Amino acid sequence: MGDTGEDTGEDTVASTLITGISELVTNDPHASDLLGAVVDAALVVDGDRVAWTGPAHLAPAADTAVDVGGRAVLPGWVDSHSHLVFAGDRAAEFEARMTGTPYAAGGIRTTVAATRAATDEQLTAHVAALVGEMRRQGTTTVEIKSGYGLTVRDEARSLAVARQFTEETTFLGAHVVPADTDPGAYVDLVTGPMLEAAAPHARWIDVFCEEGAFDAGQARAVLAAGAAVGLRGRLHANQLTYGPGVRLAAELGLVAVDHCTYLADADVATLADSGTVATLLPGVEFSTRQPYPDARRLLDAGVRVAIASDCNPGSSFTSSIPFCVALAVREMGMTPAEAVHAATSGGAAALDRADVGRLVPGARADLLVLDAPSHRHLAYRPGVPLVTSTWLGGRPTGALVGPS
Ligand code: NIG
Ligand code: FE
Image 1 (spheres, protein in one colour):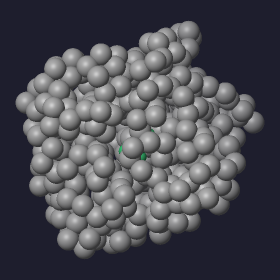
Image 2 (image 1 turned 45 degrees about the vertical axis):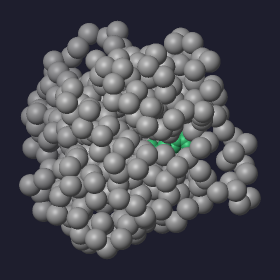
Image 3 (image 1 turned 30 degrees about the vertical axis):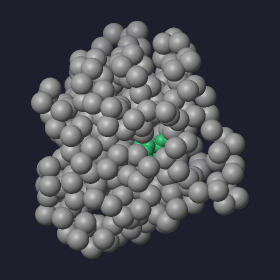
Image 4 (image 1 turned 180 degrees about the vertical axis):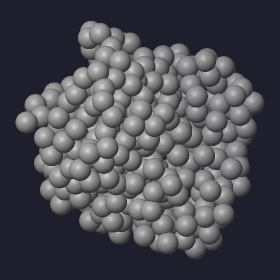
């Protein structure tokens, strides 16, 4: 999604003028407000890029025009953390959690067994269905991890499946130690033959640095091995308890560290100094009944924050960034503008991408149209399917509730 886009079968129109925009969120970093919002706006798309944005009365001519009928237009969501390559579900585990059974990393092994038993075609069809859900809810860039194969063959094929949908693929062989396996021998496998098979299909490498998964020393070894073959590091850290993961990510200068639910004051200060993006995943706390991460504390300390879905069958089986935005506003102390910014510009920062997450000249024309006058309605009207169309590379995809 995003990079590979989708061929709608239509001829490419050279330029399109989008009018009738009640509020245009540009995320222009030079604007005086966080979102770079323009009211009564227009936007010109040229090929797959944004060519112009501004007040409608100043808009230049284009080859064709689309009127979105007084709706808000936002950059498409940049979902920087998902685990879409899996088979089966864990609905019974979710149900038990809702009556008090705590979430534990070991549940991952249930999905590993189902994923190993699935064919490539089944895995591909399942990812396609989930990416379709995401696209209908406005996601235009998605990162997809492996991590439910945990053998050389199953990690490599998981990443090959993910690569059909996005360039933002992440090798997560270090998700959990498989059943009946020696941890040291498994780290040797991950940093050796598994990495060799996975690397051609991956841009990133990730480790679940947590009690019950991998400790800081193991995480350091996996990230170093990945770096040696050109993979960039990211971490799952401080999800279930306080721990060393966030400090390790900052020390190594990683682009992003994800979860950040349990943070000591020193962790927050270290994140602010390092510039590492803290990716918050509120679908996890919703589904595990844990306390939500304190986004307000991070933002007030000057930490760069992203919001992502963490879509996976265990801790957060939602593909919906609008749901995550609503949770971030209701439960994590973010303003609607901060939450929208974190799910667009923040996600782009977490993937080190300058071409997405903003609608400024030269950026990819990846955008969503909301059946609402402003971004505030995403949190104000939770659970309502407000995204009426999603544009990828300058072309509308998915269902369009026709612009009036
Ligand atoms: O990001 N924390 C580790 N991995 C996933 C959960 C995986 C699972 O429970 O299946 C996460 O929450
Ligand atoms: Fe995750």
